[in-house]
Length: 479
Ligand code: GDP
Image 1 (cartoon, helix red, strand yellow):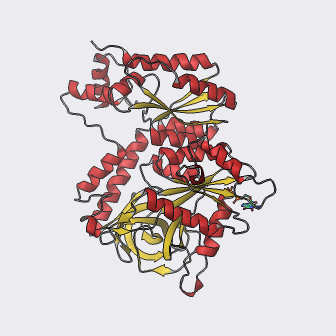
Image 2 (spheres, rainbow, N blue to C red):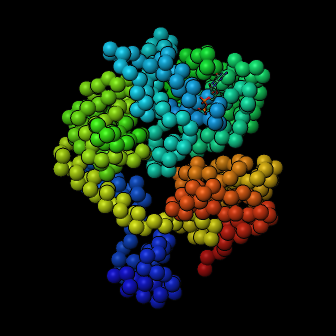
């Protein structure tokens, strides 16, 4: 019971309360002391084990190579606010969306498919219809990979802006290839060449300059070169990715949007990643389950089935899953219900043990030693680009001895610490440094809730000293 655990901990020399979270290391020690073997698992591992207990292997294409069939790329549109992400998604939808039967009314279900002709072949592309990297990182933070390719929209009159950099860093961290859409070329003062130059500094070098990133000049407003952009997406996917899936198995994928509809009950848009989802299938999505009563596409048409990379709205779930939750089809209703119930119970437990401990400066040496992370990932936000750059370069030059620890700055920018920063930190085990800036209210709450450490400094050498000391701690000889 909790009281005796507290007692044992006290004897081990650590003062804890009954409701406090402790580090993995402490837990393991506690287990040893009490003759238990403590196994530390991530939520993703725990879920995998849960599914395995029902003989389900999530995330695997069944069978061999011969069962794999090409699937369309899934694309997210990112970029700075007002650079034209929404307009671009609308322009693509208007001109390239696959014709449905009897012209259904366009519905925003969270994703849609478009077609484009490449080398005489009709090719499909699936677009996630929520512009921006927030949804992308929120899903990634939960361990879901939703996107194959990112379109980075940069307005040619504005050039690279803070959220442009943020977006590209998010895509890079997720290892997602980028196609750059240089937008608003119809506007006076548009300078697409300058955008290419600016992005070179961030490692995105245009093909015409000998790099491997495709840049396409477009006007979302006038519908200019949208086809070239879609072609670039397909070509980038073909060159960089092997997008194939087995359509002949029980469907699996992720929920990308869900809400409670007054008339229809729980409604979720899912993205099928492998297998084929059919009306009548028994499905579990996060902690929701049910029989698929209807599948609806983005034109309001009902579908009989949805294959890999196809988004579809699902009716028939018991409740609303979260965005980023995985979904899968199972043979029996009972299995679906049991999985959903176990997940719901786990959610409740997790809510209980809210304070998750992630990477933090104080325990950096222990965390590195335990091999939980291989490098120190940082996100630096500051009040001015000069100070941010100065801090970054000083940190990158830190001499931490022979066993060099990799210090990686995943993202840097001017302005307050935002929810998006916290999401990135969660997805990449990073610490956030705020230099002469604070976190936005909601970002603070989120960081606290998720256990992401945000360190504030107002003097550069203090930041350097503290991080150096933390790293050196790791390098202390062990006796
Ligand atoms: P978002 O914040 O990135 O989603 O940007 P929006 O799509 O909302 O676009 C911001 C503003 O720029 C809107 O007023 C759009 O009409 C305008 N806009 C977007 N694309 C273009 C373009 O290619 N040319 C011009 N002139 N205006 C555009």
